[in-house]
Length: 398
Image 1 (cartoon, rainbow, N blue to C red):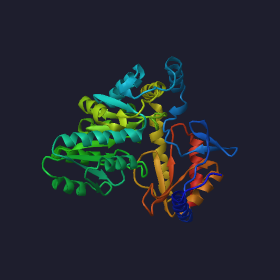
Image 2 (spheres, one colour):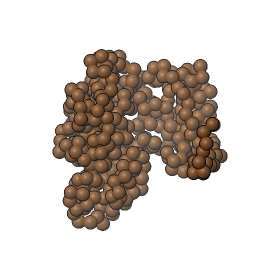
Image 3 (cartoon, rainbow, N blue to C red):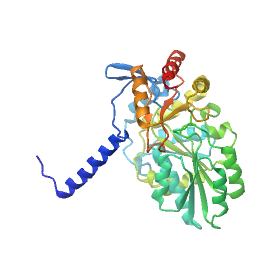
Image 4 (cartoon, rainbow, N blue to C red):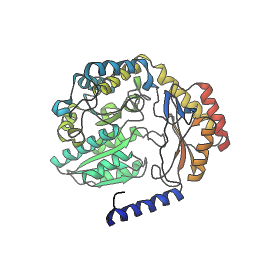
């Protein structure tokens, strides 16, 4: 057995004690191994569960056209890209996918990155670099914005302020006190990942027109679900020209992996030069780019998936309202049931698993203390029998 140094012994004691604290508070996380069966079912401990815990909103992870695109790309180009995009990792597949994403999102350009997290980091790094070229930069970010945005902003070392969730009055006051010449960057999501509510995009765009800030919008959970052909909430509301930068992920409704930053060609050129998360990352495999482009083609050719998802989300929300369960407002397929206590949420999740449904508990620090919940996510590929059975099983929480 290898010997441990006093320093290693000290850190291991600290970690063990803190993990024990998390376990006692019902906040300890552990992984479970699930084997995907199809877009909406997983195997766990020799049981098949209906998966209501996936962001695979349109079931495209298993779509024949997406799988065929991956197989063709691997056959032609191998799997890995082998280098960063600015070295030799940028292929015809990458270029084609970026053009398809930009056309679909109705922006001038798009840049692919290995994940939605990295897309957010690269976008924020680019904003910080742009601000440094002038009179400085300050970020103004919604309190419930995704962790990747918060982490990216902190990582720039530039000043930032957090405004209460959806509190445009506070955002307005922060903009009014801004230093002249300092670039203000407002950062938020279109559909928030944990509550499933939609940003007041019209209100933010009105503030943008008045104060002239740069608006960065994370459309990860709106992509594929909202807008013409799933092109996002900005396009659904007709506000595309008011959003400077939007980020998407290919890992949710598009059924794959990776992310993209979408916006003006000038901003995307700046990102290629200033975004360290892009500069120092190996390009996504060509097959990933090909899968993303194929998924967009499915969105264009099979609009019934999006329509079915939206309809089912409204139906489930109405049924849960009728049971007087505590769910935030909205119409998205992200439906949290607020249970407040960690112990209660864990027990409810286990009960759902016994009934054949995978519905996870979401606990701090992912959500604020006192807002622990079950988080249901719907797919267009869930059958009505499965959805109705889930609702009946949830009646025990009422």
